[in-house]
Amino acid sequence: MSTHAARLITPDGCRSLPAPHQRSRIRNGAAMPTGHSHHSQNGQLDSRRFRQVLGRFATGVVAITAVDPMDGQPCGLAANSFTSVSLDPPLVAFCVAYTSTSWPRLRGAKALTVNVLAEHQQAVCAQLATKGGDKFAGLTWTVSPGGNPVLEGALAWLDCAVEAEHPAGDHVIVVARVLQLDTHAEGGPLVFFRGGYGSFNGGFVEPS
Image 1 (cartoon, rainbow, N blue to C red):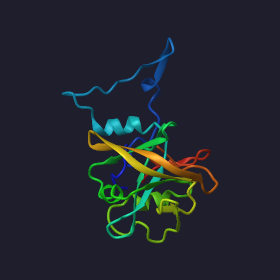
Image 2: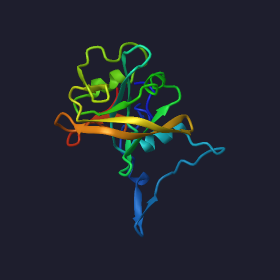
Image 3: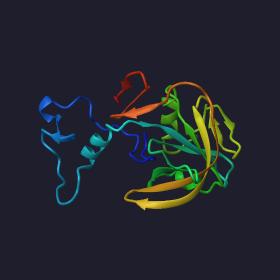
């Protein structure tokens, strides 16, 4: 998959549990590492290790869609960095890599639509995370009140307007105001964990 999304939806390379001597023990309610820690060298953390550790934080996956105002065609990207921010006003946020070729098309739209992907939509996620080509080829979708694609099978959708963009390292944090939202299909969520995909109650499929 491509690097469109922050904490990028990419393999983290971590395929097994740590050895017993590497696990943490608890002291006074705090986790105390018992194995070798990975300190930064020359002030820099190892990026592979960073992905391995952060990959242990399970996330949902969303597809952010819009209609490109320049050519009228649907556009989108996949992200696992989506979160709610505020109830009053209703704000959400997600992160996008500066190298994303889809974000420039999305940000020009008056509204964006966040599709919460379901457990059976791993292929949809992969398709929207690729660079170039027709990302919506073969996908079925309806139109949200904001005029953007709502993917068939998505659990929910949120029409949003971008309020702010904050540079953050090699990504930009996008804060958006929710304009309208609703539930859509039924089912469990698509979950991303340790470089693989799975369901809330099921196992995870690690990348080959």
